[in-house]
Each structure stands twice: as structure tokens, then as C-alpha cells.
Image (tube, rainbow, N blue to C red; front, side, top):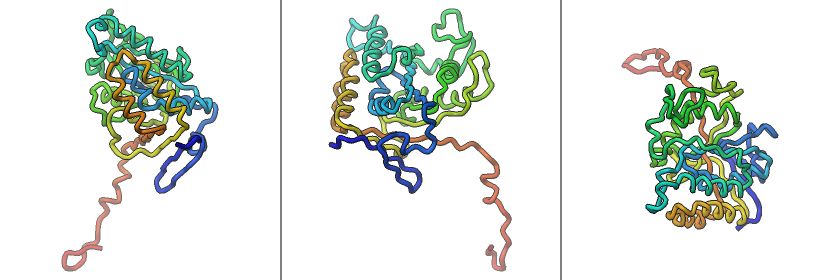
Length: 284
């Protein structure tokens, strides 16, 4: 394996190669760069972006992790059933702090594991809603609040193709929340962010909906730190099977940029131009 860091970014027919993220990025903002990694469950980000986190930290990027669910459905033995959420929280801090993420940059939104479907959108909170922010509850409410608080320049989240319902719901709710956060809606959740951040999908369990456009390759010690981080989730007895996949893949990760195309009627104007009819039914 190579002992050097290499990034390769594909932009159309262009192939950019460099030793830093900055060198292959078109919109790099220097010391303003802030990365937000969205994790439906606590171990998703280390699986999909354990190398990216290390590389971003190496370039001085301020990195944050936002964990949507409380992990309460992740027990693998009867003894864990009542305290698995607390166990996984400690495992999470151990994992990401070992990669250099400050504890204050690891935020738990606390939504019930495997029940995110009940928390789509935003609604007035009840007195017993533990995930309430400014009197409201819901993924869009919490995501908008955190996006405005952190003001990331780039966001990373699991691919939309993932089979886990929690992953799909987080993907959908986060994307619409990006536009909420950049607008004036719900002012009690904070000042609007100056611009919608660049969004990237990371592979966790399932493949990308279309090929990725960013590859990173690192020395082996980066991979070992990623594997050590994954092993922090020792309460998850199935984790070793995922580690085997990571080990076989080597010190490489891939990301796919999401590009939003907003509707504009002008995009379709030329399709409906009047054609001059030719004799015999043809046109020109």
C-alpha cells in the first residue's frame, strides 16, 4: 500500500489529483471550512468516513458529528436492554475522541432508535418530548437548529440507497432542513446560515445510487485508527463482520457529491419551440 495521502476528484471529464482536500476542491473556504457528519446511528460515520475525518482534521477543518438516534434498539443481550443507550454513548465518545473530535462537537439529538418515522417534519412539542427545541419537536426542527448553530460549509451523510429506514428518513429530512436553515423560517431556531453547504453521500451499508466522484487513499495507519474506532462499539457484537469488510477494502473511502437542481421553466423552453412543417409532413 502507498505511504502517501492521495485524493482524486472527478468533475465531468476533469480528473483532479492532489495530496490535500483543498488541492482537489473547487470551493474551498480555507479556515472557514467546517464539516458536519450526520450519523443516523452512532457507528455510521466511523464506518463511512473514518478516513475522511482524520484527513479533514489533518487539514485543520473543524469537524462535528450529529447523531440522530439514541441507540436504544441496539442491544445484543437481555442484560443490555435497559442501559444500551448509555453504553453506546460512552462507546461513541471513546471512538470519535480518539480520532481527534472534541467531546463538545459530538451531539446527540436523542430521537428514539427505529422510530424516526414518527418524527418527520416539525410539530409543537408535548411536555414529555425529550427532543424538543424551542417548543417544537421533529427531525426538521432539530436539524435546522443544529445547522444554524454549527453553520457547516460541507455536510456528509449516508447514501439515499441505504436499506435501513432510519438512514433513509435522516437523508430526506436533512436535505429539506438545509433549505430551512438557509432561509428565514422558524427564526427562534437561530440565524440563517449564509449558504446551503455542499453535501456528500458516504457509503455505510449499501452502494451509491450513482458512482462516487471523490476517492481518498491513505497510509495504513489511518486505516488502523479507523478500525480501532469501529472496535470501540464492542456492545455491537456484529461489528466484527463490518470490520472484515473495511479491512479487505484497504485504506480507501469514496464520497458522492449531491447537486441540487432547482426547477426553472426556462430549462424546458427550447424543447417546445415551434417547428416549421415541411412538405410531406417533415420538419426543419
